[in-house]
Image: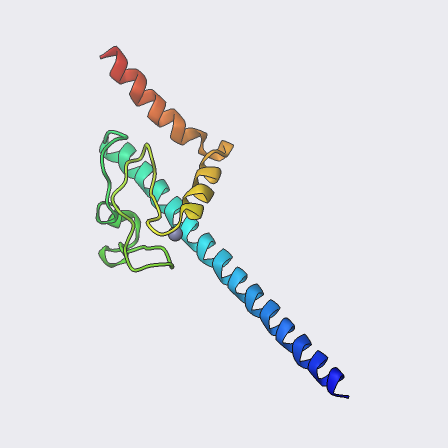
Length: 134
Ligand SMILES: [Zn+2]
């Protein structure tokens, strides 16, 4: 009788631990997704900004510089859900960086290696070529 009770308690604790781990994992994935999506958006807005303003791909671009693409001056404070700091200014060449998680940066790098991002590489390569011939 007592053995069964202990088994039940251990079983419940085990299920609770699994559930917590599952919730934490789910939260972590959701936070990474949000961070990476935001960085990808910033990078895309930086592309428009670089092309429209004729900037170098090595110009540091802050979120404040991108306000016109964000639908207002007050939405220029995107940040990783893991911490309070907004994304630092970044160059179009390198893209935004998450200050809190290397995994988030690696996930963004993986995305930017996809064919859809070929245009990004072309813009950088074109500027590098022009610089060499100057
Ligand atoms: Zn992040």
